[in-house]
Length: 148
Image (cartoon, rainbow, N blue to C red):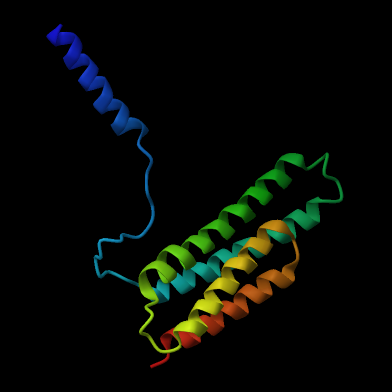
């Protein structure tokens, strides 16, 4: 009976260890380790990848039957990078870095919200105007955020 309970406990611990979801978000404990410039660079890299994905989807679209697998991969890639961008905006900037007592608080909120909505539009379409808008919004936010 004791052996059976021990095996059950071992199985439960092993299951938790092997099947636990990995969390990739920046901490909320607060650790005080921030690299705001890197996050802006990451956002811009995501925009570049979204744009490339859109171009590849458009290039492969005329023969969808022949390129079904590649089209699927590029669509998934575009969605993934738009989600990653949204994660940085919401989890990093909105949750941890933007404070209500900061100068231009409302302007920062508006820009970040517009970035979230435009990233959503990138998921829905292959319209390159959305990546252009994201680039402009990111530049506008960075200029406002890093002003001394």
